[in-house]
Length: 344
Ligand SMILES: Cc1cc2nc3c(=O)[nH]c(=O)nc-3n(C[C@H](O)[C@H](O)[C@H](O)COP(=O)(O)O)c2cc1C
Image (cartoon, rainbow, N blue to C red; front, top):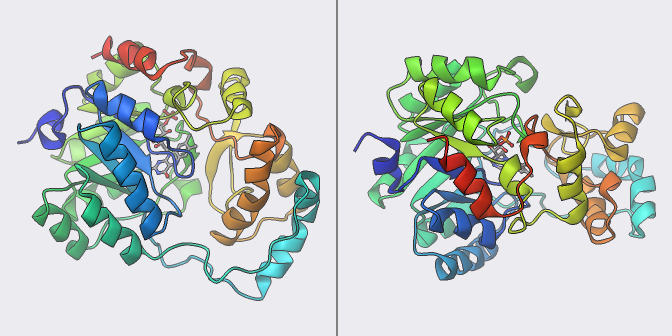
C-alpha cells in the first residue's frame, strides 16, 4: 500500500484542489467519478453544513473523495474592539454593493473540534489539511477510521514535518498555485519555491507519495510533474474554470483573461498571502493600507464579496487564480480530466 493510487483508492493520479468557499458538489463528484480524487473545501463550514455537504457528496458519488480543512495556527485574531476599525476601513465596498457595515460576530470561524466531529461522521476517503501538521490524536483517529491524511507543504522542511507527523500523502504546492500560500514553518513570503524546484526536492526528502500542485493545467504539466518524481498532480485553476465549479461568471472570465504574469500574491482580501487577480478591491485595499489580520479581514471582505458575486461585480470579489490560468481553456470537468490524463 505505498503508491498514491493504492493509498487513496483511486484509479488515476489526478486530484482536484479543494476550494475553500468555492467548492461544488458537482465538480468534486465529477472528478471522483472520473477516477481521480475529488476534494471539497470546508473552510468556515460549521458541523451542520459539513454534514449536509457530505450527504450531498455521498448522493452524487460512491467513489472516494477528500474533505479539506484549514488547521488553526494559533495566531487567528478573535473578534475584538478592533473589528469596528477594520470594518469601517472597508465601508466604501459595503456601500458599493448596498449592504451595512457588518457588526462584530460572536466568532469568525467554527472550531476545529466541531469540524472534525462532523468529518469523522462523514468518513471521507481522505482528510486533507493546510497550514500545519495535524496533531497525533487527529492522525490516529483518522487512521483508526480508515481515513487517509493528506498534508500540504510549501517547502521541503514542511514536507518532512508532515511525514514525521504521520500523513499519508504530501502535496508539494509551488508558488504558482492559486489561492492561499499555506506555509506554516516560515512566513509565506519566505516560502515561495516554484513547483519545478520544489517537487523533486520533496520527492528526495520524504518516502510517502508526493503530489505536485501549482501551475499544472494540461497534459504537459502532468508529464513534467511525473518526470520530476511526483506520484500525481493536484489541479485547481483549470477545474475552477469549468461549468461544474461554483465560480461565478466574473471569476471564470478573470481566469480566462488573466495573463500568467498578472496574478499577484496579496494579503489584501483575507489577511493572509494568497494568489489571485489584482482587481480593484485588491488595489484599493493595498493602497489604503486597510487590511486587518486573518481571519477578521477574510470575514469582513466576505460580507461584500458575496453580494458582489451575486451582482456580477468581479472587481469586488476574491478572484483566486494561479499562474497557469491562461492554460485553463476547457469548459467541462471531463474535458479537463481527459486532458490531464493524457499526460499520465
Ligand atoms: C478559489 C480557490 C480556493 C482555494 N482554497 C483552498 C483550500 O481551502 N484548501 C486547500 O487546500 N487549497 C485551496 N486552494 C488551492 C487548490 O486546492 C490547489 O492546490 C491549487 O489551486 C493548485 O494550483 P493551480 O491553481 O495552479 O492548479 C484554493 C484554490 C482556489 C483557486
